[in-house]
Image 1 (cartoon, rainbow, N blue to C red):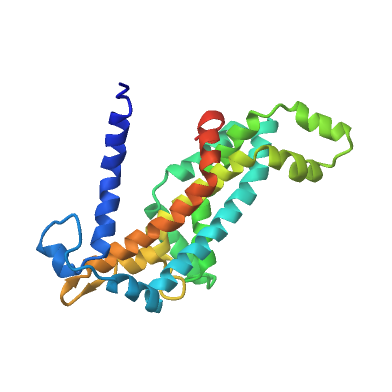
Image 2: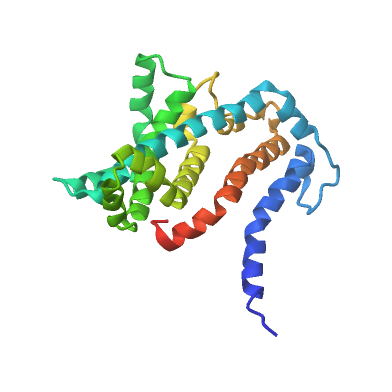
Length: 265
């Protein structure tokens, strides 16, 4: 009997335990959560989800987060595509140093840039807007997207470019109609990681917004009341934040597999 599946199954179940605990807590009251641990809700309630879907402070947080995350993903991938092509196809003075400098921006903690971004956006009246957070996240996501896409592009022979030029294709016609479909897997992987990094980032999103563009992560940090933290409400909000990431993973799951095999993932 083949028992190789036992260890991976146990590992997956172990990883799922926190998610299961979060889901069960979302259907409990705060008093029940504080009263002790249980695998199932003793007093099943939907009040936590009802408050999120009826209170503008909560559901607007999800809308704001989705808006700036989508804007950031589109900008990051659009800018990274020609930049990655340049790094993969051409050699110029300082190209490797410039490529390394781009990656160092990904390595820097967001706290380093929080105050400069705050002062800059306040001066140009961009504070508390979706574009403020989306542009700030570009500092980290564009280098990441360039790094991933350059790995995919370098795996495509340069003969493809030369053949297209001989056939009379202009650069942008070749780039949009031939090259981009060829690296569709890489674009999917880059978009996935840009989406996820922007979705879970808290410090810059909280620093650069106050009311109009406040994300759900910032809203979740303000659940304290005179009676303490509303743990059931926090659990429900946390459970809902998993859904966008799960949807994105479902649509790019095949691209991610290819990314592990072909690109820099």
